[in-house]
Amino acid sequence: MVEAIFWTSLLCIAYVYAGYPLLLMVWRRLAQRPVHKQYQEPSVSLVMTMHDERKNVCAKLENCFELDYPADKLQVIVSLDAPTDGTDALVRDYAVRGVNVVYSPVRIGKAAALNSGVAVATGEVLLFADARQQFDRSALRELVANFADESVGSVSGELVLLDEQGKESSDAVSAYWRYEKGLRAMESDIHSVPGASGAIYAIRRELFVPLHPETILDDVVIPMRIVLGGKRAIFDPAACAYDVASQNPELEYGRKTRTLTGNYQLFAQMPELLVPWRNPIALQMVSHKLGRLIVPYCLATLFISNLFLLHGSYLVVFICQILWYALAGAGWFLSIRSAESPACQFPQFSRGEKEI
Amino acid sequence: MNTFRKVLLVPYTFVLMNWAVLAGFFYFVRGHENFWNAAGTRRI
Image 1 (spheres, chains in turn cyan, green):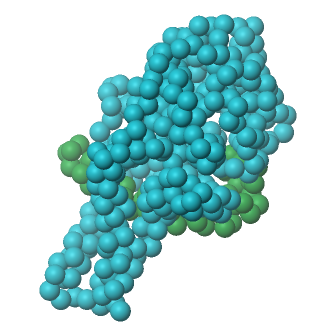
Image 2: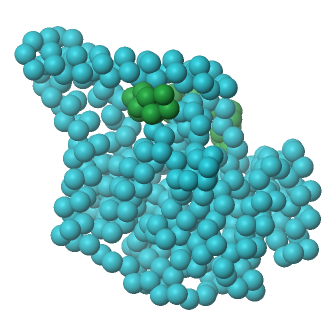
Image 3: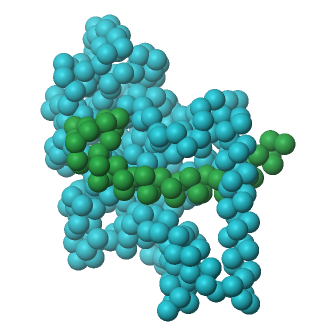
């Protein structure tokens, strides 16, 4: 019995982090579905929701005006959710430059603010973004080129994490993010990605269905509804947005916790995502999203079951686990010494921060 | 030293991200006032 628990736990962890990527590599080789991109210029509504974004809003709006896209085909909409730091005054200065401002004097949450923003959108394509990240100049042109392929309903761009020197970051969080993007690229080549990067994704306007106001992960719910509707939700690394990498894992922990809470909510609200005859990427959903929710429990059962199996090769696995957690402890010690904020604090979620 | 720190942060980050799953479940059940979400402090 203990051995069965041990091996089930180990196989589950191995499948999520290694088996599934290997499966995708083989699957992509056998059944790749290329997207037929064609550069075009449909009208686009760029919708951003903001709460307290005083430090980011001006840079973001200037970045939007610098996009390589005809100004008369780009509608910029900022949906303000009861800002308290003067973000609204800064955004209103941009109204003379054509920015549409939607204002809510009371907190309604991001999903409801997004619904309000989309309600005034007139473009054939909706582009969603966060306030903090900067678009590459050609990002929008690359994104909309994918809509020339009729099977595509949603396109996610690539979020690139940069270090302080402006180069692609190489720390642990960024390594994890590159692994994640590798999975998304393969999933996209096969059919669809179970989610998008909230910093940069676009959909066909007619496919938008207003979100439930309590939705946490709009960037997963919107693309997944599109997939359930029969279109593809793809990933295009040619469309880039840039962000600065977290300097310590605790900041990433806060964002990740929010995302994972959203994943629990996602499965509770949309159980059909796990049903193969309803969702064409149910296997990807189980392996990629549900698997990540299961792994911590498997790590715990692996460790506990290993305590009862301290002989032969089991002992080697146990020593490896002890070493791994000892290194993690050392990493924690280093992190709290170098970080400004202490580790193990409860995460402070910045409004509008998305999964990275 | 910087490389050494980066290497040590890999297992730490892995453990922390897995701990985030447990915290996420807790917040899913109890709600979290700092989520930018209409559910706010009430149960999601």
